[in-house]
Figure 1 (cartoon, rainbow, N blue to C red):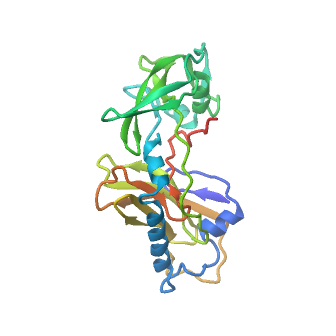
Figure 2: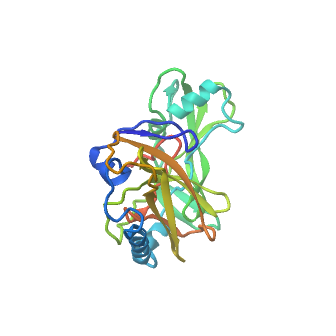
Figure 3: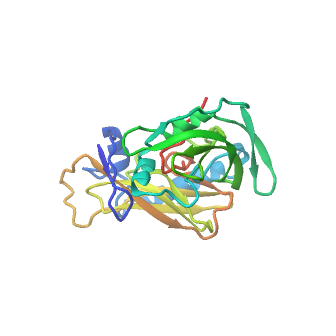
Length: 303
């Protein structure tokens, strides 16, 4: 299945989805029970969000989540002053890098993640070679040329506010300032205290951004080409913010019409009653924290 994003909702993209994912998340073709107007779909979604919040609030999983290092913002910083040309921007977005130099070998395998306020935790570190491979998805033209690297630090947004983490500072050909990539390995996700559910026609993919004041979040959600867009409902508690994705039906849609196997990715901004703070942002469907996705793609899992 192809995934398309309208210009008003984000970058145009294509990705393959399975037919099962279409039935569970995109909602093309036929209406599923519990998701239409007047059939209790709204009440069912609200009850699921309540269950997820009740399971997480005050749980061991919530305590483990807050104690760990979980990036909720970019782990890569481009050279200060920005990239020089549109070709360099294109290379960065496409992950096109080549290495023309030596990268240092790892001198230490662990480092300190220091949160604002001074509290810290120890995390494993990736090597310069691993960090480079995390940046690189191709080496086609145009590309950015890495000539070396050294250790440094990077400020990263996390679930407990900003943190200073060990990083690799990559020297780029033609640039005085380095490209920086965090070296600290994120903590493992805790086991969710609530089971995954299925049957929702909406699908929440990932967190796009949290506003600087913490009063709104933007997420990517999927809907079918026969739908009128994605909807994201929010349930706030003292310890969590639960997001529920669903779809908006087209009023003029023929219920017997068939749809092509496509899904549309849409960015949806949700306003909160109060700032997110250290509350856990949860996906009602999966029962797990909403993952953050960097502009360069998902953060690799390092063993």
